[in-house]
Length: 194
Image (cartoon, rainbow, N blue to C red; front, side, top):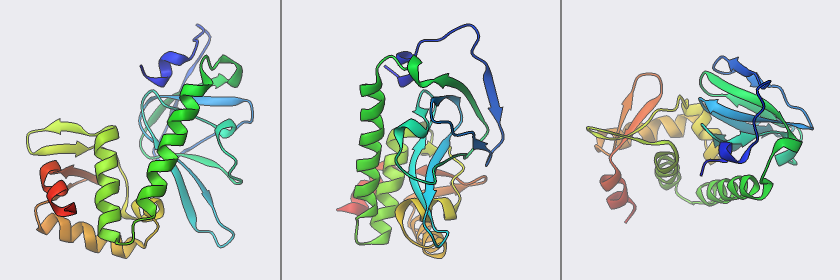
């Protein structure tokens, strides 16, 4: 069951359209239910360093009520369609909160890896499991994550991400496509990690 099935809908709810890199309006008593596209939640440190808190897709629910981060931002990674819902319409908050908790734990585990190449591989594997689609040559991660987005999520530099992604592509473990999309060779990634 997707998270969207946990929300009650009224005929008056309006679908909002957002461009890539637009920001969903944060409100203390409102949530955004993502109907299509991908959203990244983030905060930043005093020095301006972005800290990614999560990546969310179709059926997920995001909003200020689920975060203690201040500042808190919800940035569209792609074009997004979303419905603004009053927090009171959330039918089963425990399932939504568990979804947020599981994602936070996964990202903490990835971030805690000592080797950056393993961080990137585990991050790609997580994206594949969460958002991947079968294609003839592997699994397509159809997210528009820049190298900067990846570096902010796993805690490294953009230059390092670019270098390692190029290395992984030369090794045949991934295929980088236009518009920051990646095809993952799942069997090959598992072999690399051993």
